[in-house]
Image (cartoon, helix red, strand yellow):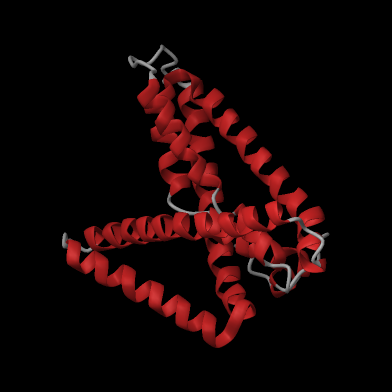
Length: 224
């Protein structure tokens, strides 16, 4: 936390260019991925995770290629009608996906928050989610990308610090269990079928957020 929240780090151009995609990616999915992978793939959860990382890298490769080659063509008017049409269609698809993703995660966070204070109320969850969306949208209209980046800098710094703490705690706990012979490596009792494959494909949402880099061209050059 001390490192990530230092002004020198927070104001570094490369870090600021990283903030928006990271803020879109880092969410509750990181906390639930482990149990979901264990349920869907059993002892091969690490193989499933490696597969998700490979898929994520391919998504990133496609986005990097678009930033490097397609965006200049779009800006210069040299893109063919097929590329322009596909670009517009992808924007609609992405917007629809974000409606679902943002609403889902905000409802999830609101539900966790209310349960933490002993409240179970679906209407209250919807109210909190709606107020959050309206507030972020209004602040974005007022302060623009730079204003949102300031919030994201703090949020991402705090979240990365928390995840680092969780990883460190799990590493220590795992080491203690390993030394004490308390780790059970016997195969988990489960079956892997089409339903489990669908669950694994659903976890691709963990990497949703990389594509926001495509919309930062007004603030950062292609290399950044």
